[in-house]
Amino acid sequence: MTYVFWFCAVAALAGLCIQSSRRNGHGMAYSAVMVVIWVLAALWWSGRIG
Image 1 (tube, rainbow, N blue to C red):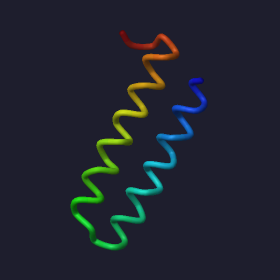
Image 2: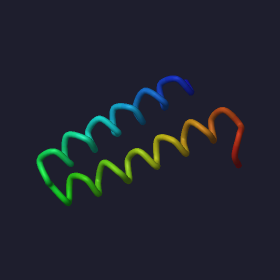
Image 3: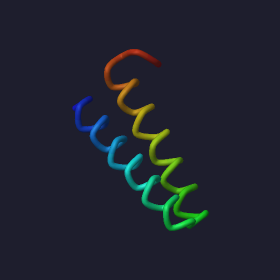
């Protein structure tokens, strides 16, 4: 399951890059928040935090 969370984090990071190239501020903010959420989910699931 941790790998799924890491994959989602990478996908959100790709989305952040795409939104950045489009200069879409709201899309960048949403993607950045999703990166943080997926990274925290992966770290929590693997037992490294929490």
